[in-house]
Length: 431
Image (cartoon, rainbow, N blue to C red; front, side):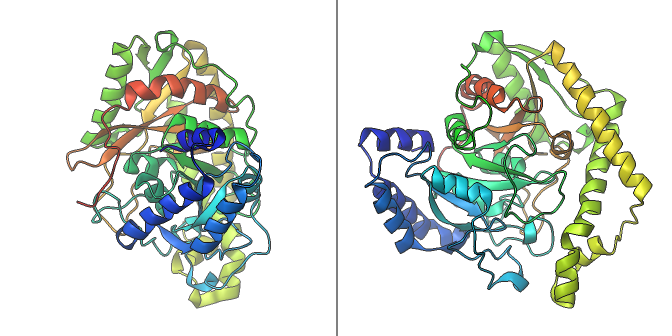
């Protein structure tokens, strides 16, 4: 079941929280030796919490729903290792704000999912793609994407600084929302780049994403009616980085456009002006420069025990000058206004969520070139499964709306998703 289907059954008394939690734990037991999505699980505690929730009136939209937490987000009752050798014994005293909101809404925090070290660089996750263990599930939200994609859990938190949330959604054939920057508190999550970091969530349907959006009280989430597909004006966008697209990514975008047009939507091409050509470089400049401050404390404290990737950031190996950083900030500010002015001519942007299929690699988590610009623009992005590539692995697309239009994006995605997503395999098994 999707999270939304399970929530409805729990409300109607047709399903218990304990039964749902036990089913997830059984799936994890059967699959995780291969997928390796989890860094920490406390099965007896999860069952005890679910059993307690069965005794209570519904606490909120997530009541009784199992949820995975990316292991660079603090949990008061579980370790937060950041997948770093120097934090293996770290046990925070408080939940991160997003975890506290989820618990208060009735979620069962099932465990901690594997991640790229500090969701940034250094040590890679051990997680494998659920459909083919030779391939990456993407990153840095590796474990969360794979766990939801493999039906081990209904929902999971991910984060995005460049493309770490939307790209794994595409690779694993699942839905994901990266909300408007700063609309969800990042307190208690490891900081990489303050002006980019965003907490998002994975599910198996747009309704799942909307449930979590309601828990976080995103403005009007779940209150806007889904429009008729024939009324939608969709602008498809190659982006200035089209030279990086792979055949599978191009095919997914073409398929999504064709399906929407056939369903009656107005589909036109959006060619971004030259202003946007430097957005990938600007995002990387800001990410690396802000990373200097974010990792200075751990570099000083742990020295050679800390992976060299973080020392490179702290030591400014790229030689980023204050002038270059300010130019990147200024470009981002100008581009945000320019991008949203374009929406007079359309309702939503449709664009690649990844270059193509998940790479055959246990080191590379894929290229974030089709995500970085949208992250820097601070806009909400929603990943929708679309098709499969030549190796049979999922390839998705993403839809994008202006800042603070998360609820409208969810409503439009409800209309678009059944049209775009009708051939992605729903149940994954290792090839």
